[in-house]
Image 1: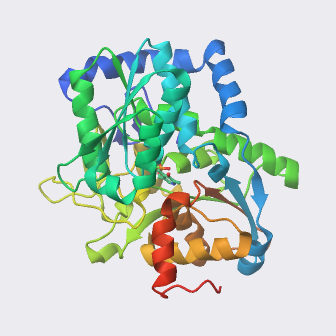
Image 2: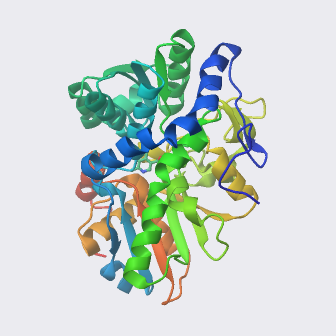
Image 3: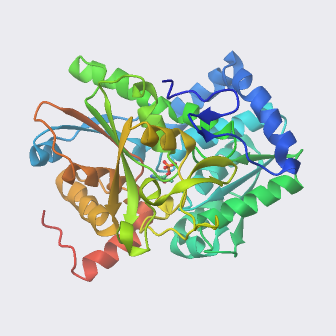
Length: 401
Ligand SMILES: *Cc1c(COP(=O)(O)O)cnc(C)c1O
């Protein structure tokens, strides 16, 4: 089974495709025809690789977390995507797509954002490369992620509130798709995860695949072996996980563990654990697993972390789930919080709440002392300080571990 590459229609197994309104088809078709030639060209790669190195700060460290390893009695390495410029893995994709837009001759960039991380990354890339930037964001997310909204504005982006539905990420995606229909020629839509119509899932996975490329090289340098026993990553739409899994997905001896946001628990009615709760459906342009009612209306997801608060999952991951190539875990809000405080206490690293879901898998699975376990630390916790402080102050979580 080829897990990594979709077929010519954008399918990973039975998931994927390009289920879009006819009016959007010319935009998507243009991308489908041109994206591989452009991003594989020498010109593009020279500029992209230079920016990753000198602007983003890659490669990011692969850090052997000794204290965490002691606690869990196994060999834990953290892939430090939190150390990227703008604080998460999202810049790898945003820079790539804004560069691609420039090669396509588009001058107007438009994006959606949940936690605000993708909006900040896109606004950053646009400031750097001199393109106009519009970001759609759910009204509720605008409230819970105020520092990122301020950053986008300072970077020159226009932030537009999505006021329909749950006023969160899925509604921002709807607004962005509407905008793209209205501005087909001038605008490139920078999708922030491995979701959306073909070729976006593949395009974003390729830009994020630098994560596993570096893991391979760094692990080899540090341990003499290229493959870990486990790779763990959190999954919202699935871009950091796709990047962390990419160069391991065809290697059977590497086990892939994916952490979804359980919210208050799978059966609580307040969850975002798509593989546990989702059924086959179409969301935002691709066929995948979707949290939906029997008549196909999207069910409101819930997660304490805005970046995982999404009722779908990319087709790449839906296929890994269906084929049992990856094992999926549902991590509840309080379990993620506990892991965030644990990492902070043991290693002096404050993780993003999203990344804390990946860390919490350490409690759910037992590892051998000789196992090499790589965890993708997708982002830093600066944006989540308000949530963390509230937990500290209400005394429900002590700093002792
Ligand atoms: C956005 C975000 C995620 C979730 O998005 P994916 O596409 O699933 O990677 C995870 N971690 C951080 C830090 C994020 O900002």
